[in-house]
Each structure stands twice: as structure tokens, then as C-alpha cells.
Length: 239
Image (cartoon, rainbow, N blue to C red; front, top):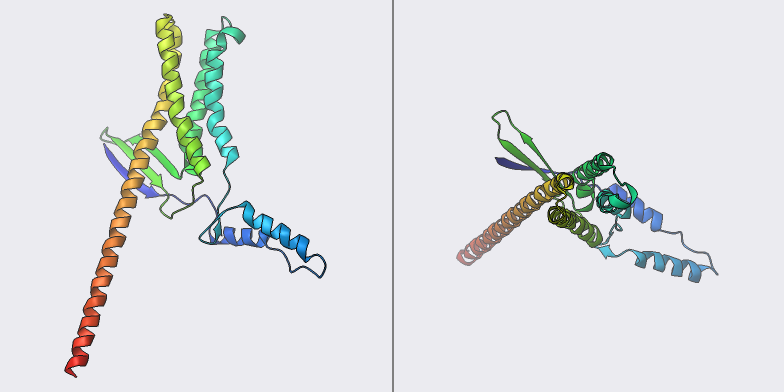
């Protein structure tokens, strides 16, 4: 099994996007008599979004968070209330929960992970039959909103835990047919947990390596500077 990592193009717009944001939030110079109201409105708009390094941080991506949670919650609710709304319809519940779990797996793997935390992973089997892991992560210090990150990781880890509890309940009540469905949903959610955990570790490793290279380069530049300054002093003293 081998692992590799790639750079991921940023989701948020770059310089042109931020320039557009600055143009949208800018306002013309007010005429005499309306300066106070316009100035207050401009101050309120500037305080609505925090600034980092002179650039407006993007707000939480609530739509992405909604779909990140939607299919997880739907699959769990359909399973838990199947005895009330779908009595005697095991096949229908099995198909519906499996489809919702598959939709959730695809959404988390390809959409919400990339948009909310800047990570993406995939796995394939090579010609030799070995498992190959590929990772993508942002390398440009893109701002990730804490709400996006917390919602992503909380939902990611809570979902397999909930299915695990439901699996124990199916075992205790001897509902082994339902246990098969729980195992299918648990597997779909747990694969993303493993993939994103590996991807996050890979991103931290790249960040540490980048920090070490920057530090060593800075120390090298500092040493060259002091060597050059000492040589200049010796030249001036001998002259």
C-alpha cells in the first residue's frame, strides 16, 4: 500500500474574487447631508465580516453543511422509525437506507470534504493488486471557517458511532436481518472516517515539512548575511 498527495485548487476565489468583494462593499463618497447615514452603513458592513490580513474572511458555508448532514440524518431517521412508518417493508427500508448512505458517502468524499475542510481522498487498486491511497489538501493557507470544520468533523465521527449503537441494539433484540443493513450503513460512513483521517495526517506532514524547509532556508539566509557582513568588516578594516 502506498500513499501520495497532491495539491488541491482552492475553492474560494483568489485575488480577483477578493477584489470583487472589496468593490461590492465599497461605496462612493457621500454628498453633503447624507454622510452620517452612509458612513454608519459602511462601518456596519465592514464590521459584519472579520478581517484577516486585510482580506475579508468568507462566511460559513451553511448550504454545504446542510447537505453534509442531510443524508446522514435521513438514513438514521428512516431506520429508527421504520417500525412506525414502514411496518413489514424490510426490503423497502433496506433499499432506501442503502441509497441514502451511498448518497452521503459520495457527497462527503467528493464535495463537503473539499469545500468545508480543504481535503479530499480516493483509493484504487493498482495492476499489482495493491491498495493505492491518493490525498489532496490545500497548500496555500486558505481560510477555513471554524463552523465549517467543526460541523464536518463532528458529523463525520458521530454517524458511525450512531450506527454502531444501533448495531448493538439489533444484536440484543436478535434482529439479525436488520443488523445486515446497519453494517452496510456503518461501512459507508466508516470508509470516509478512515480516508479523511489519513488525509488529515498527510496534510499535517506536508505542513510540518514546509515549515521545516522555511526555517532551514531562513537560517541559511541569516548565516549568509552574517558571513557577508563580517567579510565587509574585515575588508574595511584592512583598507
